[in-house]
Image (cartoon, rainbow, N blue to C red):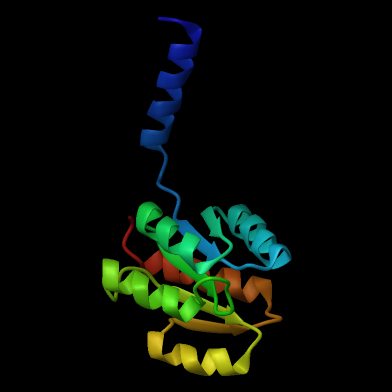
Length: 143
């Protein structure tokens, strides 16, 4: 067996033995917030996938099957509430916990229709958001 094949086999064995990391989908078109959440959630031990708009988020959410979603409401192409409605239509209403973030009070009020598990108003305490995601991930079914 070649050295490369042996290394690949070893990585596969380690991956099988390691506990699965919980996956979080972060959806925000503001680069600084999205990158901050990616970094902090990654540091907290999560596997993070990220999208910059609602259309991209819908494709990622269906393919990646996240354990928790963190979704901004003011997104281009498809807003966060519409994304959540479409996603839930495809995968079911109780697939994964949803944490909504927004700077817009009117959007937060409108988001009540999609029944988020938590709402954080921008600017938010990143440590509180990470704690909420961690708690929701602990209680969600692994994907």
